[in-house]
Image (tube, rainbow, N blue to C red; front, top):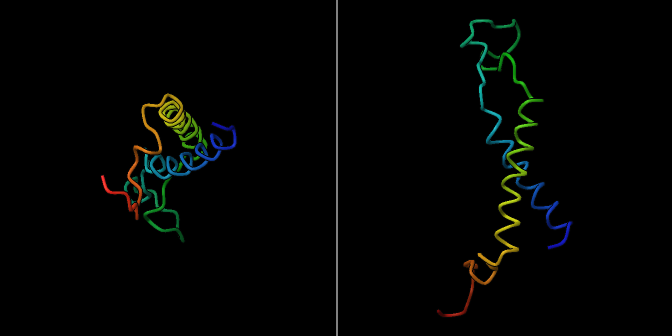
Length: 90
């Protein structure tokens, strides 16, 4: 597996993981009863984006390592995956 493929997989997994990590520990201004005038009450009080970016990086690295292991170990091959519009009959 080429380094470019691993980087591409990591990039996709990182962005997907970010959307899973973003809601962790979020408290809205309405929940904390600390609404700043002119902002939406549903806006987060402290989004902690740096911590979430770090968590996303770690989660994505673990998931990418698992995907790379599955592909390189031979546990799962491309031929094992169902393909849309496959005309072969089983």
